[in-house]
Amino acid sequence: MIKLVAVGVWAILVTVGAAFGAIELGLVQSMLQGKGQLSARTETLNTPTISVPIMQGGSVVGYILAKFAIGVTLEPGTTSTGRLADLVADEAFKVIYQQSAQDVSDARKPALALLTKAIQDGINEREKKSRVQEVLIKEWSYLKKEDARR
Image 1 (cartoon, rainbow, N blue to C red):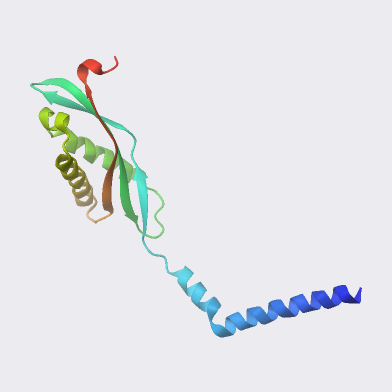
Image 2 (spheres, rainbow, N blue to C red; image 1 turned 180 degrees about the vertical axis):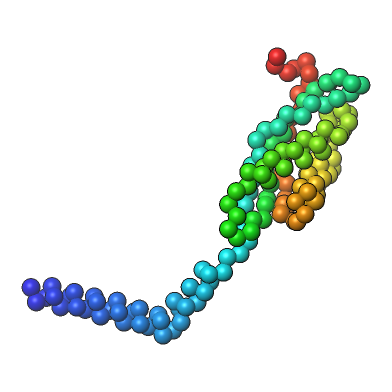
């Protein structure tokens, strides 16, 4: 019984001593100060698959099916990226739709790099701040009109 009480008192003394030592060394203050300062964080936003019709001579010749991953900088306290996902889908649709049918069916690497840069610049311009850091293509498919499911 005495051993049990002695071990309990010893554990309390060690705990109090460790807490006192941490306070004296300033470890707790530095940890608390670091938690008080929130900084901007980078998050990846995945868009849903968008389908963009490709027009040539006034008729649809095919469709682009695309899905993007966007590297976004969020301010402290910001949790919702819903509006930004809509902006990305809208801007991607506009940029892809403006391309000619020949450019889309070729899909060369330099053209895709210009496409992602145009989407990034368009979103940052609309938001009036540089929130989008990177646009990545997750999926990219060209589907001819004849191959489309009815």
